[in-house]
Amino acid sequence: MSPTPSSTALVDELADRIREMILSGEVPVGRPLRQADLAEQFGISRTPVREALRQLHSTGLIELHPHRGAIVRVPVPWEVRETYEVRAELEALAARRAATRLSSETISRMREANDALYALTMSMADAPDSAGAAPSGGVANEYALHPAIHEAAENARLTRMLHDINLSYPRNVPAVLLVENVRHREENHHDHVDIIDALAEGDGDRAATLMRAHVLKTGDQVARWYERHSDTTVRG
Image 1 (spheres, rainbow, N blue to C red):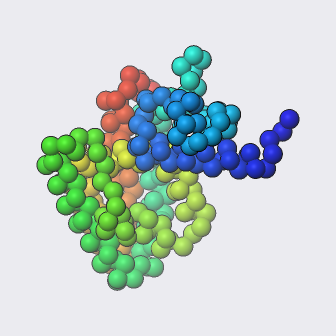
Image 2: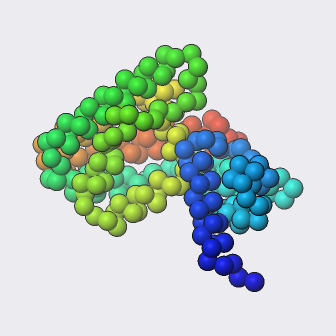
């Protein structure tokens, strides 16, 4: 018997909600996803939960093991590096296109957001109970560098491709790195300043070059984080 439209919609909605729990870091990598617990949490039967987990397994976000159930997949570091290699080229294209399309007001807000993110992560690093925490909310996310550039690039297909890539791995890990790694935090802020300066000058080529290097550097840091948090051996 094929699923009804209403049951399909329910499974899709569940998959989206569980995916967001994983990508936000609410459910960390390596954590089991128990059908009974999810069914109770969402107030539904286990059947749509099971189908939603199968859907997420097909995207590579979770693993399904006999007798162990579903587990949030720990990304393989070489896969992370490959993904960021692709993302770097797309982000560079977006930066090149955005360089002549950003208003001075948006540039100003991007600078404010970059400084706010730096201040927030620095204060969290000094807090004794912030280990493993990721910054969220406020001006640090409003007019953030990458989303503002994607919007200004004015290319819907490019934006969709970047959005899909960003769904590949939990987005809290780069944020956690800003709190945990002082050198990465300093370099991230400095990279953003340089990129924003290039955008403000309308220099698309320089903005693209800086963005490509920045994303590749971040990808390497993220891959190293997963290396430290898994038993995976890097390919090659």
